[in-house]
Image (cartoon, rainbow, N blue to C red; front, side, top):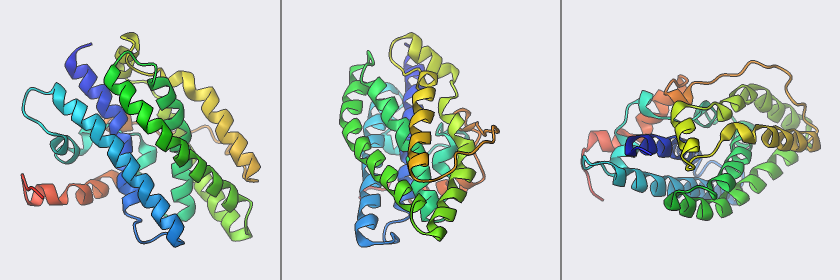
Length: 251
């Protein structure tokens, strides 16, 4: 596989973890309880750690001196390849948990398949990350069940989140040309093959949580091609502020 194609494929994986990690980082100190606050922050750190591993690998493929920090902080909005789901704002705690749950189920399925990649570096990253994401999925699933089968207010709020965020789930399975090339070379994951298992698991948990599975079939895509929602620009302005204000700074 050409180095540039592999580079773009890695970004398509890593950007999801970066952007979701940033979203969760915004909540540090704002969790409903101390234990939950710490758990969310730790999940954010897990995702950022995974991102670093991917970006370090990607930087090594470049011959222009780019570093992992350059890749993370100095790209323009259209150059990020994350799905639309992970950039959605922290509207309320129900949204945070549903967004996390919808992504975690996909992420775990994806990493298990990535462990079969012919690329040894990606396999190594997946082997470490799959342990972390197993916990992430258990955490978010438990909260979906707790809120869905809790009080009248918690049920209504998390149902609202499920209904609003459902439209972004199909974007997880959209296949780009880069992904197709990676699959053909035995490096990438055929995400479309994960779709049935994904929705089966999602619907099972929602049913257990006494939540309704949305019936609408309209889905929004575009993130993998660099076309994002209005929320992405605001997120990047926070994420990139220090690096752009003080270029080449060192801690």
